[in-house]
Amino acid sequence: MTSTTDYQELEALARKGRWLAISTVAGSGAGHVGGPFSAMDIMVALYFRVMKVRPEEPKWPERDRFILSKGHSSIGQYVVMALRGFLPVEELKTFDKGGSRLQGHPDVTKLPGLETSTGSLGQGLSVGLGFALGARMRGQKFHTFVMMGDGELQEGMIWEALHIAPRYKLGNLTAILDWNGLQQFGWVLAINEQHRGDRRDPWSGIDLRGTFEKLGWRCLEINGHDFSQIVPALESAKASGDSDQPTMIIAHTIKGKGVHFTEGKHEWHSKVATKEELKIVAAQLGIVEAGV
Amino acid sequence: MKALRDVFGDTLVSLGSTNPDVVVLDADLANSTKADKFAMAYPARFLQMGIAEQNCVGVAVGLASLGFVPWLSSFTVFFTHRAIDPIRMLVAQTQANVKIGAAYAGLMTGLTGKTHQDVQDLAIMRAMPDMTVLAPADAIEGEAIIRWATEYEGPVFVRLARDASADVFDQEYRFVPGRTISLKEGGDVLLISTGPQSVRCLQAAELLQGQGISAGVLHVPSIKPVNKEEIVKAAEKVKLVVTVEEHSIYGGLGGLVAEILSEASPRRVIRFGIEDRWGESAPNDYLLDAFRMSPARLGERIQKLVA
Image (tube, rainbow over all chains, first blue to last red):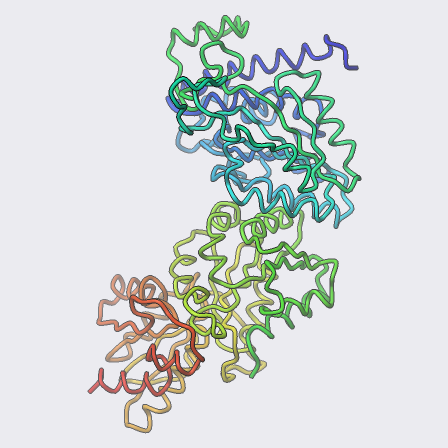
């Protein structure tokens, strides 16, 4: 079950998802690339391997719930949902256009399959906490996953939820930290200061794992681009749904992961690829039907 | 005559006995808002969220999506100022079935001063699409509104004063969203008010009657939605329209009435309320006098206007 080949399908889906994301943004003339790329592998694992969902019945009461709290990475979620069958892949072309179900930030009133609206940062974990608490009160067995960004983690409301979830012993709640180390503008580096990206990690030098653990979260730390770590961590979190501790999966990721010129570049937070760049992207991702 | 906070607590307890989906989320003020009565009656459905209003709102949204009917318990000011972004994005924009029990609204907040007084809430909440905004005058209307909001599917903001006001309604009262209620007819001046201030307007109108001034009182418990035609009709029957609210004169009931009349039936509208300044810690009587909102002060002001 966990052989290397077992993840080839997920890897291929993630490559396709990245292609659809960057090409959709290019088609719309606006949108985010870096964040969707850093979150892509985890979302593919969630929708294709870990979560029980019914694309044909998005309101199925027993479905697992996923909230993309870092809502500006919406295109990443939309492409994974499209590949999973929640919406036609063709519909991705409407992204950000007037009248579209695919708003710039996820809108639960427009697209079935979304669980809440996100976009103003820091709010998704609280809604997920409500799902998990309600599931316990109702005796429902579904699991709730909430993905947050590390830049987003600066929002105070998240810390309110981080404090409350362990008090209610919500083992059926899993937060995923997409720790790509870059935010939109961020703190500039001092002269001669070195970093893996070109800006300082928002949480550099801070023991986030220790902080979460002391607040009462069970922590798993993974490479967020390695399916052999992603899938077991998500499955372990889900398997502990009846436990009395929520899980925090700290996923070390690279913003813009998947294409050499977007990786670790803050300017690809939101940027539109040129036709020439799209050709390179298609080649690097092994997309043959790209038509660029 | 019963304090509106007791009405809140008692009505929640009553609703809790018939509706197992009613839950209460508190931001650590239940013994002030009287949601503690619900905590005693149904501890498993009372969810303490700590001094963290934003998360409290978000958790309620999650619970609402599972079919619960969450009532939020905190002071008005912490909803409309501190937690306004989750109320905007998570509650109003998704039309979540969340009920905001906005306690300690207005000036009279039990000696807490300007930090805890909220006289901008109507302006803020009224500008929010998909939000229903209600302000009961007395205990009977308070209970009726809390019951109606629990049955209604969608976000509701209920502006609840802390203390009691004299009863103006009897047990026959039924809340109808949008409807305005004439508490008194009068030909010289029409006082349009909301919340417990409507009761003080009625008392002012009775004082004015003794001085030969015929003042009507129109109570607007439903700030949004509101029946515009009823306001136009009532205004067209009198010489002068005065709005009176325990709220800023900017953007609340006065704004609402001025907007409606300027489009449908242009006329002079005088707005009484909190002028462009903050409140202070003081007993209720002091505040009503200082802000010229007591029946006696209102009477004097109206007398000068119609003289």
